[in-house]
Length: 385
Image 1 (cartoon, rainbow, N blue to C red):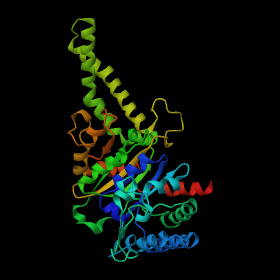
Image 2 (image 1 turned 90 degrees about the vertical axis):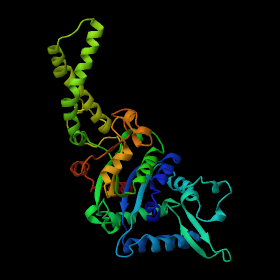
Image 3 (image 1 turned 120 degrees about the horizontal axis):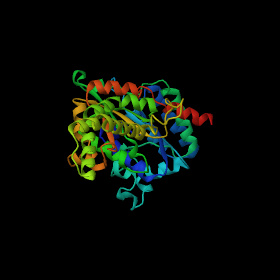
Image 4 (image 1 turned 135 degrees about the vertical axis):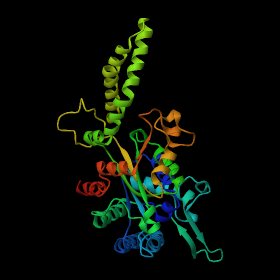
């Protein structure tokens, strides 16, 4: 779990970048949670019980932190980010990259910023009384062994099985100016272990907007067709004539004679629209792993193996702020310092999508079913297996 303080300080992207690039584990689920008192009390109690069994003073320190900083305060709940990883020895690997809690457990080399806590956490004690902790912020919470992991995962099932996937953020700002936008970190960010997804989130953090929803998502063919339907219309109506003109120029050059305007129009209506359709199919296949013309019957609604991350940002002028950082569709035309300029490679493989209007955002949220998150079901499957 990424702590509320770390999220509020816009350090989420940096933490995710470290986790994705430094461990050979698969990120299989993510969710913004806003814990209530009941969860906080039971979670803190779990850590205290672990401390008694293992004679480890970290449990009490973390339990006190959870009670003071992660539960509701001032009439509102605080956001934490739950990340679930799968692989071999996940507890040990995540603990190693998270880093030690206490200075005496750190070597001189570790203090250079190698671990997440070296970079983002604080542990400050009284100079005259080293046993007195003045300030403690762990940045990230992760179980040290599988027994504790299983106890904690069981708590998530108990308390968050029916919770909303988008946190209510109204207490933080004037609700009349509140706007949401949807962002997709596309499949090209997940083809291999990389810090890219976290770095992109870090770039979006410069907007000052809050992440209020997040999920790992795989498009079905029908969802991708629905989501990118407006693109198909644009390709056919606006770009088909340009594709036809390009075909005309190639034919004139190769056959060394000019074609009539009528032939040019025919090329636009035939080759141009067919080529535009092919480009649309490639976009759908890129996002869903399936082409409409080759998908086996009965699998149109089946989630693919192609991974994306969906994020909901919220705040004043959220749509414009995110699109300014994202950059134009064509990475070659994007200004320096934008996400697509940094990481995009073509108009299709351009690393991220962001809603272009309030209406588009609402339509897109329905298609990806943003209020639904399979994370708890995934945890339940783990226990059942």
